[in-house]
Image (cartoon, rainbow, N blue to C red):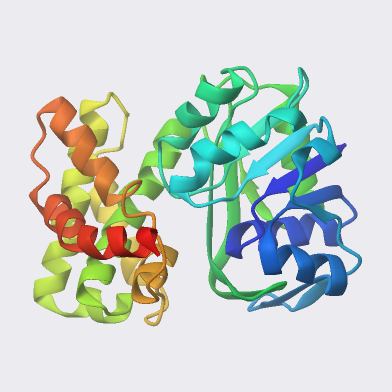
Length: 308
C-alpha cells in the first residue's frame, strides 16, 4: 500500500508521521523550508502522547514524481483544497482513495470537482497541533483521532483497509455510521470556537467562562446546526448540548489553528469555516448573525494577510 500526505503541517505532519513511524510506505507533499527540512533532517514530533522522530522522510513538492498511490490524505488548509486537488491529479488513478482531514464540510465537493466523485471519501480529524518550525510539529492537546467513510455510507474494502492502517499505527480511528453527520458535528464545533476565539483574542478557557463570550459560542453553534439541518444533515437532537460539553472538556489554553493563524497574521480558514456558514445560510434563507459578525469583522485582516 502506497500513501501520500498532501500537506505536512500540524495535521499532515502528525498523522503522516505516525503512519510512517509504523512502517507505512508514505511520501509527504510539502514545499519551501518545510520540505527542505524534511528532506535533510527528517520529521520531529513533540507530542503529549509521546515524542518521536521519522528519519529518513520521503518528501517532494512534485506529485508527478510520486505517481499513482493507493491513498491520499489531504491535510492542507480549507482555502488551499481546490488548488491541492488539481495538483494531486498525477497521484490519483482508478484504485486511489482521497481522504480530506480538514475542518470544513466543503472539501469532498471541491476534491470531486477536480478528481471525479469516485476517489473521494468524507473525513475529519481531531487534534491540536501546529508546525512550530520547518520539520518540527508540536502536538499540544486533544487525543489524536481520525474518522472517514464513503459519502454514501457504504461499507467498502478500501475504507476497511485504511482503518486497519491507522489502527496499526496506534491512532484512534472510527468509521461513522454517517460520515456527513460526523463532519458537520466537527464543523459546528470548530467554527464556533475558532471564530469566537479569533474575534475575542482569547483561549477557549476564557471564552467558555465569561457569560458574554459563552453566549456567542452557543449562538454560533445554534446557527451552524440550523444551516446543517436545512441542508438535510441528520444532526442529532442533542447536538448543541454535546458540542458545548466538548468545548467545556477542552484544555483551557487550547487555541484552534484558524485562530492561531489570524493572531499571527497569516491567511486563515475564516472563509471555509464562518464564511461557509454565512454563504450556506444565505443560500438557504437561514439567519446567521453571529457567524456574519465574526466573518465580516475578520475579513479586512484576512484580505491583508492574503495580499502579503
